[in-house]
Length: 78
Image (cartoon, rainbow, N blue to C red; front, side, top):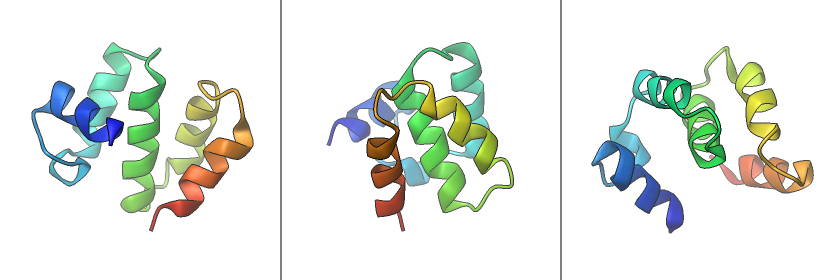
């Protein structure tokens, strides 16, 4: 999966489980224009039931042409 390659490249971890929300937030602050990082942060926040999920949802939505596609990706998350 391409997301795993992104995680390995930026964090030197094998999965998102080994990355903290704080690490993702720092990288997103450094590279706010990378939509994949925005999505990974959204995914991690949803996993951890973060209270800032709605705010990150809006930021991530800016990087997707089709909001329905993003919604379907997020709905697949457990």
